[in-house]
Length: 229
Image 1 (spheres, helix red, strand yellow):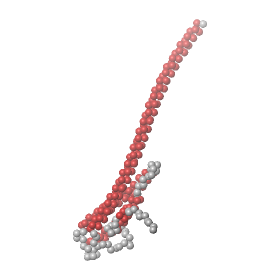
Image 2: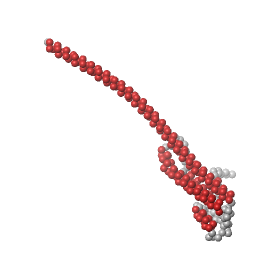
Image 3: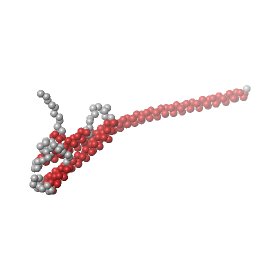
Image 4: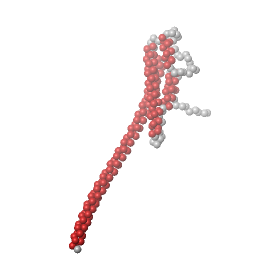
């Protein structure tokens, strides 16, 4: 008997088909695909974390993260607006079977459906005319939790990246501080050597002056002896 490995449940799979509408499943699938595209991979060793990898993250993945965050905010605002409109229409919402085709409720529903993504044509085109309010609230809470989780992951990744840059900056500052200390010690050594050479130069100049004076005195004595003879 063959056994098949079950794949981990994704965001659309966590939303039950009986309570989660098709447009929300499509939206969650799109969000999951975009999150997987910009997912940060943790390097196995420190050598693999090169400057090219950091440049690729900053110039390629970071704009995708920002775009995904803006898109999530837009969808969150749209879901909140839909939820507030459903609360306003719920007490006095007539049945779709009793409302005329040109009623405001029908036009509002059509405009709301026009904003939703294109669904599979094989899906059922006759939704439940009387949706359960508890299911609508559950759909809204699930969407809000998914958006909050994605925003949290994005913020955590950005914080970890900023911490890594800070650690690298601290390491470079420590190396520069050590280099300054080495240069300062070499400057002191060179200053001592310069002073020692100055002393030796002064001593050599004094010795040369003494020899010149001696040779000058000896030359005068020789001239006096020649005059006598």
